Image (cartoon, rainbow, N blue to C red):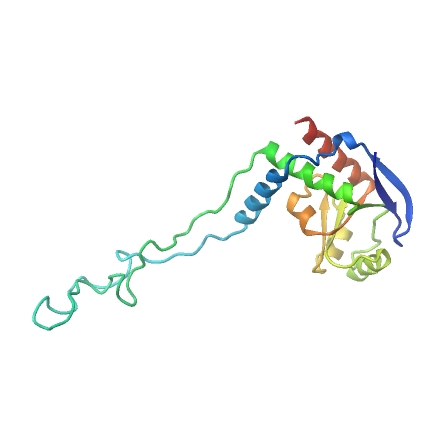
Length: 212
């Protein structure tokens, strides 16, 4: 059994949560993690770079000067790519950088990275997580009590408006539900905290990935 520490809002250990070693995936899935992260980052690219080819640059087709007799190089039109202000050869055009990743690959990547977080103790379970009002100062005080430094991700079972509003003003703090937390989020945030109900959801996703 792998042990996940259960802590209170002061950072004190109050118990342990057992995760069966059989459902952890640690010997495969590293390539799946790479593929999913690459696809996710590629999807964030705007792909809006655009240049004009020689046929798209405005201007007349009149020769800048006559073909012979001036001692100058021949020139046919000012839109030529060899001229400043002319067209661009093989320049970029708007395109999509999105990559497709299969459901099973995505599930395997999630299982691999979550298994690593459980195995190395990066994931901890909070005995409770709630705010009486959507105030950033309240969440900042909670983080201070947990002694969490750096990027922190809270994983909750369902949407909580108070927590969502309190966290959106904090640069290094994010919230995600157990159903929607992504591979990239698990990798990007070194401090991971999950509620008890959220941990149940994460383990269910882990089991489904192993069965697949």
